[in-house]
Image (cartoon, rainbow, N blue to C red; front, side):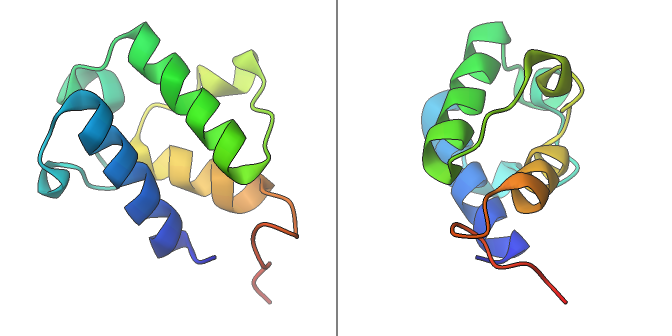
Length: 88
């Protein structure tokens, strides 16, 4: 799975969860400031990422994921090899 495909899935989830137009969500979009996501929204996103990609995102790392792009990068870098191919 490519970084762009991950972004598309994260954007679709956020748009559905927060009832937004997906076009409003870019890689540089900030969860709290731009999307007005609260802590429950962010918790649900973390759970969705963990379930979808076989990840475990520690709380101390999750608090540092502030933008959509950072979430996409985290998934791309930490998903298991079975879930995402590594780039060479």
